[in-house]
Image 1 (cartoon, rainbow, N blue to C red):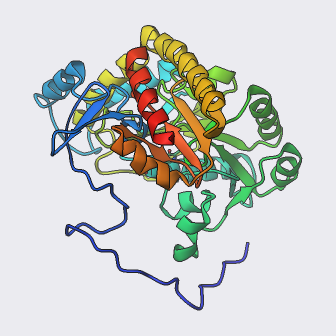
Image 2: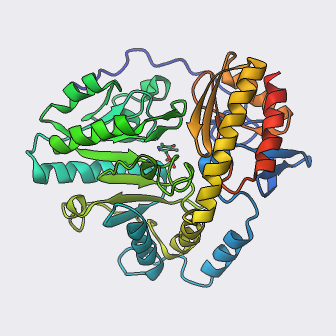
Image 3: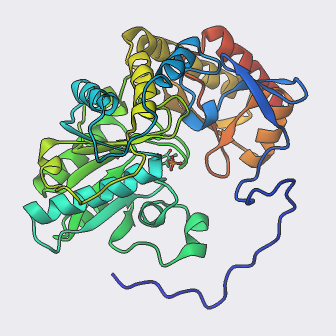
Length: 402
Ligand SMILES: *Cc1c(COP(=O)(O)O)cnc(C)c1O
């Protein structure tokens, strides 16, 4: 693939007034959050908000969770860091548990979602060249995808505004249309090493892929010896009411990335893979200074025990059904919602006006929401939310919709 030419004229940059020394890469809301409890957070003026963002799908256990606090406290009694030059038990135990609970045989730990995807892209490329030819290298993402903001993940991410100012992005990574006919043709190329897909597209507007579609992709990739990679950074670890989103549809990947909620708000990412892919990786092929250190791994073990608890998962399925039904009901009663999509505790609602206008109104009503595209609002409550919590959030949502 040809390297896209650098743009002749750089995009215009408008300086942004910022109240602090922080680099202004975020459009931050003008509230300062200081404390949290359950599914609620409080700002410096003492105002209370129901959090339907969960810190963007991170705070699965909500705020001020006593078990998490104790796990963090206990972890400070052990080593914080010693480097990956030595064995440490918490990371090994966490990996073993992830293997018991999933399709995977091997686990690599890193420090964020994008880092997990970048690492997984390296692993599938290495694997593809051991089973195929040297030409087998291409990583194919899907229309509507989001995989992160570093060069290769960004190349697999279908957000023109995120990409344009930073070209050239990593080569050998492309985006394909979602329809099976086109995908079938794209995947027929000898050069394709992996297809990467979010089983539920998050930032791209909460698009839930059905079992039939994923089964077709599984068959196509298996037939062509292409790795099927799931990015479950947002939709995994309990959010669908199943520990992993793929369990909902029963279509298993070859490699999968996790991050957001995995360590209760501490930075961590993970790459889970089959023995076959793992066997292609040699010492020295990849690494991370912090990845899977004893402190963060101990905390993640607590989170994993909690989010894999069948009672919690059942609650997410039951409450999630109620949440979806309630959103449909609000949509038909108010006419303010065009479409409702989702499952479990991950929902997207399309509104007529720009999402960026509804989000601040919701905040005024005491509800935190995050957009997903121009006209979609995302609803990602902490997994511990009760029906009463959800009901309170929905009342505020309805007031914000006007
Ligand atoms: C958030 C997200 C990422 C990136 O994770 P970071 O930890 O922000 O790097 C990648 N993929 C998906 C699906 C995400 O939701």
